Amino acid sequence: MYNQPEVTQMQTVFQMDPSVVQTLQSTKEHIHGLCNQYLQRPVRVQTIHGHTYDGVIVDTDGFHLYLQMMPTHVRGFFNPFFGGGGFNNVILPLVLYELLVISLL
Image: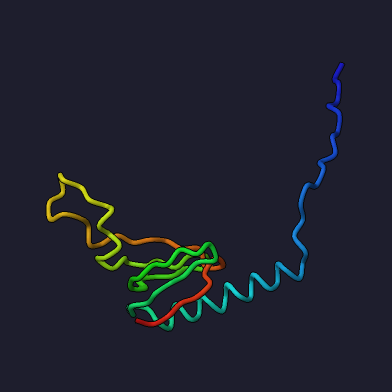
């Protein structure tokens, strides 16, 4: 005979308020539009976590800003086997809704 498995009910631990979802989506779309407007421009970006980065906006999608780091921030990526003392093409992906400030340099 076939025994059907018990149906277990999932318990919701967290559900975001729909008004917060709408605010996050509209903020993300607004920032995405601004990032597209300032592609290939040097900017300073500050995140909601307090981190600040200087670089050039090289791309953006619906979720991330891709920032090519300025040479002052890439010193920590030293690779003795690469030569030249460090990379000058490090691209940092930043989550759009975690950005607090974007300033033109």
